[in-house]
Every structure is written in structure tokens, then in C-alpha cells.
Length: 361
Image (cartoon, rainbow, N blue to C red):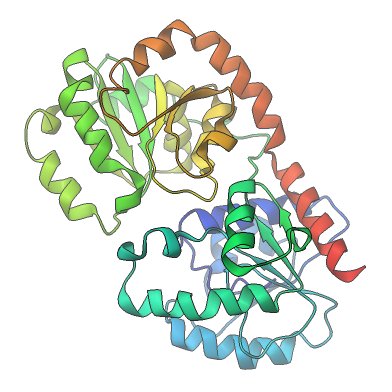
């Protein structure tokens, strides 16, 4: 499995997606060899203890060096494998076959303005070529499957949906709500949590509009967790002004235990994204017993199902969403706990195994 691009902590949900799939393989019959950047094995000891992790010479942060290594170093080392799985959306110019290619999404086509000039040019050149070279393709949702088939004229039978999965022990070490409220100064009132980097498509600006117009007046606090993205400056500017400065808590990156505790203690997980290939925090909320309020864009209705409210990105439509959540909380929590059984690491690993078998059969 080619994970040379997977810099720990730097590539967002795609790292968690593949790492969880690999964890699901631990008890199965497939034993992959992982080709990873320097530092990956230390960041994921549960994988390096079980599988061979062959590290590249650098940390994977330089795209030109990584692309060169994939076409030389990786090519030489994968000659004896029956299948090479490229997990980052592209296949090197020089590569072994057969191949499985994971495509996480086609956001660069939907929102090209959110990408730098060089990266956009790279994706436009490499992704269509890679999709057509691949023996088979893995995607996280039916939404992404349809966009890949339409964009690159790929036959549907070549594309396998391999969903995100959550571990059965998710939340067992979650930080207690009382500790989180004290440490982060959240007070005693209701709060909603939004776990996402501050990229423009994630919807922070929309959510701040909802807070300004409606939720701040209702005594609701918004808790933002996640790293800094390309929209960070605008988010920070708005958070410096009232009423947001006193009703929004910007916590940045937090530990897994704190993340799980915050989601579990929240009135709802909110997810107003304009574009997602899957949206892993949604199934984390289901597993933790928290209802969801999300947009009606991209894959989100497909993933949420009946475990939350799916709303248009209209601030007035979101005004009474928390009242609806309160009125139907038990039913939504129950629906989420049932629905999350479709999205476990075991289910994800089984779908990946089936995709492998389709390639080598």
C-alpha cells in the first residue's frame, strides 16, 4: 500500500480513512506491506507492530520528492507484489500493475478556487490519468463513485465503495463533560460542536452567520475544533467581534479523548459543509450518541440517513434546528446507533478486501 503522501497529522480525513481501514485488516486474511513517509510508523504504532512499514527517506512534505520516489524507489520495491494500492488519489508515471487507486473526492473540480495554482494544475493533470490507468478504484461513498464515473468516463463496475469506519471502542477514553466544560470555559449551557479545519468549503462562515442571527441569542455556544485551514484568517477576524467573541470557543486541534468527549457532550454535531467525499465526524457522532445537523450537499444526506437533520444552507432554516433536535433526541440517537453499524472498521476492511479480490481474481 502506497502511503508515501500520508504525512501524519497533515492530510486531514484521508489519513484517518485509510488508517482505520488498515486497522480493520489486522484480524483478516490480508496482510499489507505499507510504504510510508518517515515518522508514520511512530505515529501509528498499532500498524507498525502488526504490518511491515517501509519508510521513505524523507517526511513526505515535498510533493516533487515524493512523486520522484514513487516512480523510482517505490517502483523498484514493489516488483514482487501481486497488487499495489495507491491511497492518495494518483498513480505514479512509472508503476506496477495491477493497481487499486483510492480517490477520496473530486473537490478540485467542484471548488477549484480553493486550491493553489500549482496543486490545481497537478490534480487536473494527474487524477484523470490515474483513474484511467487504475485496474480498479476505491471511493468512500456512492456520491464520489458517481462523480468519478461521470468526470472520467469510468465504468461503474471498476469503482468500489469502501466506506469510512469507526472502531468499536470509539469513545471509551472520552474526557468527561464536566472536565471539558471547566478546562475550556464552556459554561453550563448547551453547546454544539463543529470538528473541521477552517477551509472555506467546510462552512465556518455560514455557521457563524447562524450564530450571529439566531443561536447566540438562544444561549447556545459553538465549539470549533480542528486545525487551521486556508480560511483561518477570515474566521479569526469574525471571532474577534461580538457576539461571536463571547459565544464561540475556538479550541484548535484537540486530543482524541477530548474530541470524543466534546462530541458526546454536545447538543448536536453541526456539519454545514458544501462538499465532502464522506464526512467521518458524522459517523463518530452516531457512535457517540449525538444527533447531527448537516447541509444537504454532496454525500452528507447519503451518510446521515435518518440520524440527523439535513438542511439547506439557509441560516433561517437552521434557526429552529436545535429545538427540533431536542424534541426528537431519543429517536435520532437510536437511529444513529443503529446506522453506524454500516460504518465500522470491520465493514470498511471487508469492502477493501473485496476490492482487492476483484483486482487479482
